[in-house]
Image 1 (cartoon, one colour):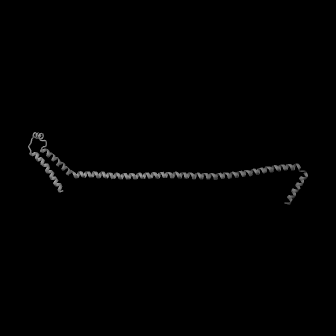
Image 2 (image 1 turned 90 degrees about the horizontal axis):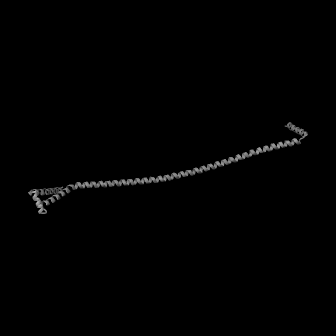
Image 3 (image 1 turned 180 degrees about the vertical axis):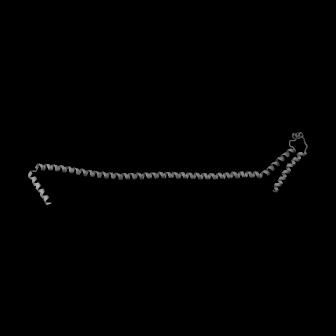
Length: 197
């Protein structure tokens, strides 16, 4: 604090000195221009340079802290932005990894669903083929039974026809060969059998 106060006093003294020197000389404007033309570097030029240096030093001293605070604040702001951007980048990378993982899981799930459908299709195919085989065996068995039944019926019908024809032929032969005495004998035998029962 003392150092600043000392510096501030020095700056004020320097500022006041050139003005005192300028006011102390009573030169007219024309004389000053003649002096510049004849001399090169005059005392007023030195005071102006000193005045500028003191003013610049004063500005540096006075503005150093606010300027450094502003620059530090800007640096902190940029650092905060960088940290924030880095955080957002990491979050985006994490989301990207999560989305990639979900896509991978979806691909696996799709493959699993396809495999499941193929498995179900193969099972349905096997079941349908088994059912068709069982149905074919049932139909074949039914056809065998039907054929056997039809065969039996045809056999019985044929036997009945043969029997009827044989009976008709036998009747015809008997009618041709039977005599009236044979008829009487047959009737007597039949009546005897009826009486016995």
